[in-house]
Amino acid sequence: MRVKAVIHLDYFKENISLVRAKIGKNTDICVPVKADAYGHGAYEIAGVCEEAGVGCLGVAAVQEGTELRKKGIKLPILLFSQPSYEEIPEILGTELIPFVSNFSFADELNAQAVSRGAKIPVHLKIDTGMRRLGCEPEEALSLARHICGCKGLKLAGTATHLAVSDSADAGDRAQTERQISLFNEAVNNIKAAGIDPGIVHAANSGAVILHPGAWFDMVRPGILLYGYDTVSAGKASSGSKDPYEPVPVKPVMELRSVVSLIKKIKKGESVSYGGTWTTCEDTFIGVINAGYADGLPRLASGKWQVVISGKTYPLAGRICMDQCMANLGVEHDVKQFQEAVIFGGEAPDAGVLAERIGTIPYEITCNINKRVPRVYIG
Ligand SMILES: *Cc1c(COP(=O)(O)O)cnc(C)c1O
Image (cartoon, rainbow, N blue to C red; front, side, top):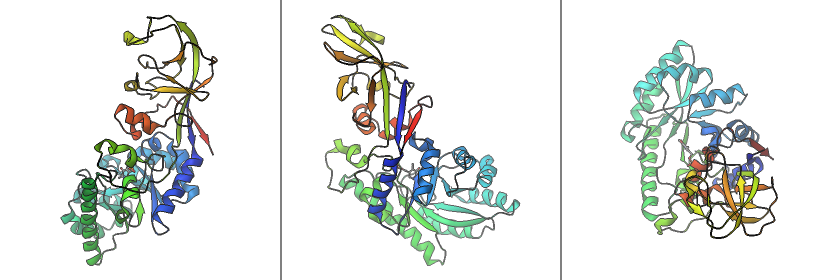
């Protein structure tokens, strides 16, 4: 294979156990499998989730949910994004559980559910500061009442989303605690009115690590289960981090390629497009079968390296669409077609690569292209 993404389902399982150990028996897990499970393969990850007995899955696109259903996944599936009204029949057909942020969507869902003689579970979404989906906290009770008055709807859950929960910075922690208390207040108002809010949930990965007060009945950690502690990476540069207890998860994805060709170049010669890198001595160059079309960011040109049988070699020149070049040095013992690890495993992981180029591990793993075969282990 020219390049492959090795996916350690065994590590994913271990990461679920680590999160479970952290949150305790009374809190369930919703596993976000949107964006093809952050690039890891939604169907395969969902299979592990079913085995591991997690509470539900989360998708962003209706079509992502439909695909999982077609392949036989039975777990409840939450729909994290606001769909269009045209997508409602598919939502009902594949039994996705949508978030409801306003009265008009509740009405439209209700009308279509009633016309099919169905009563479908929905989760009330409350905006406590993310300023994305959700109703205003002051509206939450009346929207909950409205949902309960809809013959075709059942209030099965109440949720919010946290904006800065993965920052250990004191100000960001305080901001998250404010969101949690706004959410608590809204949920308590609903309960006080005699309405069952269903499954109450708020925590993404950051809150699983830093904010026990956000765990409620269920947590929704994505990146943490895929093996990255973004609290330690994220805002490291802000310098004002308060202590916390990390969760020792293992990165689930490794990107592995091969040295497709080795050649000797002369002192003063440049490598790759733009001639941005010039060797100051005669050296050997290894052509690696991975480029930005595979998901190795072009911005990593000049900033990354590969590991070949335990030794590290810097990339030389620009990363191309399908290939990149490594400087093997004046002398080397690399053989043609030997494996070159780009990230994960014996090489630094996608979180380190992300930090190096100013992005987040989410973007690195999501961007591993479809043409890169996933090889599943465990
Ligand atoms: C993606 C998503 C999550 C998971 O976020 P992580 O930062 O990966 O833990 C949780 N909740 C919602 C609503 C999401 O869209």
